[in-house]
Image (cartoon, rainbow over all chains, first blue to last red; front, side):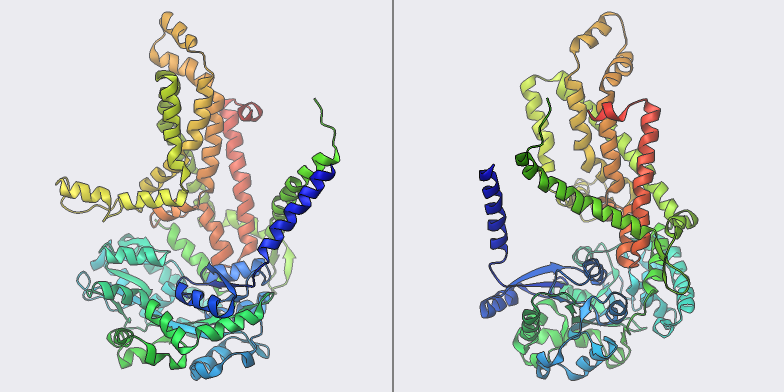
Length: 353
Length: 285
């Protein structure tokens, strides 16, 4: 009897001691946001072990909501998905901007993110990277594709792919000549607009090859020529362009959708100091440049330009004219309960025959 | 034989009980409570059945459920049709040593995860995939055909991923069957069909039923295969639950859907047991 007890106690002790032997930083982030090269460098410099959990905006919010903001030391939601979520579920803690090295950040972007993530007197986000959603087009198969409306174009039957997510609804609404962002705070008008978008999507459903849910799977379909017109992120289009010049990212005529992804610290983060260290580390110009050169996302780091490959600037110039840049539609903060309206509409599209 | 509940046994039981209680019972209760919560017009939290009513009033929700359940039944039937000859061959036709070898051969693909197997199928079936490539080079077709992203490929994927759970109970129930039963029927002049329907099937019935229950539940609760292999119309009920939790942030609705899935699938199994005149206790033993 005694022996069993001793054994059980020893087992628990040995299990728990091995788990806490090293300082760790748990980051909830997107695929590609923490390149292995930089993780290794950070671990070497600080001795802190980095644990990554890959996710997307919706799952990030759900995970942190389930634990009331515990389990992770750092999260990377988009700037428009912070304030309403914070108001409702209090899953983040206020950012201490004095601990952020603001000199290495693009000032205007930091100010915009501070403003958009403000709840009460505090702000919750620091910008990390930015990019746009638009069209990834195979010019050989679909030379004329220029706007979101081409996702519903009969000419590309069976060669179209997009996500059943809110950016698609918003892009198509812009292509219809409407302004969904202007209707953000009028739920009834927004719902009516989105319903009319959904009607068009249902009518054009036979043209779609599939609704993608995984970025790599989409790139694979475009790469193999199975898909000619897709809605996707700019960096995906540019990555493919490096392999095959026929494929490129196209800024849609009615405006690419601009997003900024941020750093936010969960309410019950255990290792806040390490989180600030990581933010300052990865936004240091030379590190930010490594990230951008690899993943082709724009960075919020100010001095990174001089370390960037020439190709990065070329990509941007090729896809965006001056007018296209002015026409980028930056996401304003999403008010609460819009997601429910959109969720139902997207379910209807998927269920329609 | 009765165990005395000694403290030693208790130490070993504690982790199991804690596991069951903390990780299964408590979350279920929390989900149940969550499914009964809602907001009134002023946005204040209240107790309500609205989440459950929603399922019946909103066409697309019960439509998705009916679709999912129908397909799960089709998958169960197809799985049985595919695996029964295999099980019969392994237990009754080949020698003992070969039958062990064949059983292991059946198990091998299931050592890798479902995700990997589904991706394997996708590589085979996609427009630029292996099958299309072979057919093109043989001159059977002159343009690649898309074989993925439709209901047929999805059902095939589901049958494939759940085959093992049908074949194992079938083999174990057929193994116990005395060959002389079949021989006697033969001697008495029964046709093959009669032997099959009056002797083999009734004997294997508990195995068939338990296999069917497992396959039905797995197909109904599957998320991965319909999502990856199914086409643009393939809204599965589990995806509906995921969408409520993740995309719509509506946990109360998602919890209610979860419980409806549990209740309705139990109901379907109960009806199935009644119709086939099987008893759950006997089937599971």
